[in-house]
Image 1 (cartoon, rainbow, N blue to C red):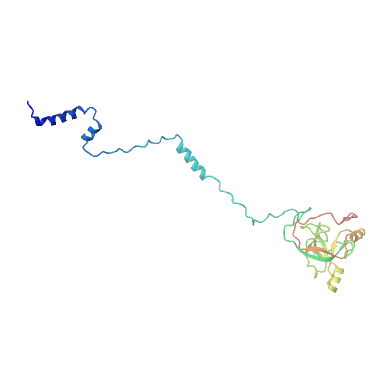
Image 2: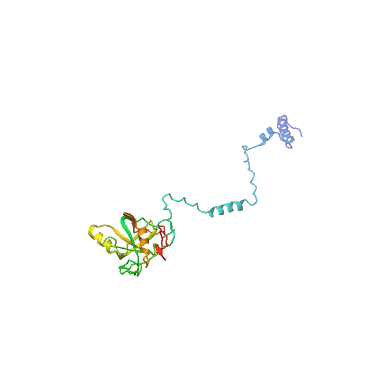
Length: 237
């Protein structure tokens, strides 16, 4: 069949297209494409799982829930602990309460030998004891005598030179006379002793002038439980 000359260009274009189908050039691809160019989104590589990572993270979370709470710093206003040494027993240490009141007074001593009645340990106002006595501790103070208008019955005092507690539970006639006459302060500590040797001991223990005693002292003062006078021996000798 003979082709008209007008069909030659068309046939030539078809041959070019068929010949380039095996490996079309970029220009040919552009000619063949009938739609707008599209770009495929790049895909990020998936993260590889780390063995044991979830369990390690969970363990850290669990451990944080069981951490001990921080201990608050102690307040600078916290009260200091009180000393518990001494008081009520032998020995001594720090007092466990506020200090008592200091009184300046004449101090003398008496024993069973020069008691009233003589040779007895009878007392006028039993408080801690049924008769004169005591060891000098806070729990077991030694008897002392005074005018009850000057020292109320049951008053506790501490005498530092002897390191002993005393309690008012007897009447001292000379003390009463002096206080009622001119308000002269005078107390009489019991030394014990039924023999005449106690009088020399009492004289050696008696200070001159007025001396300080602590009225209503706290427990815990230093204490010496050695008897003031026993078996002919004075605590000072």
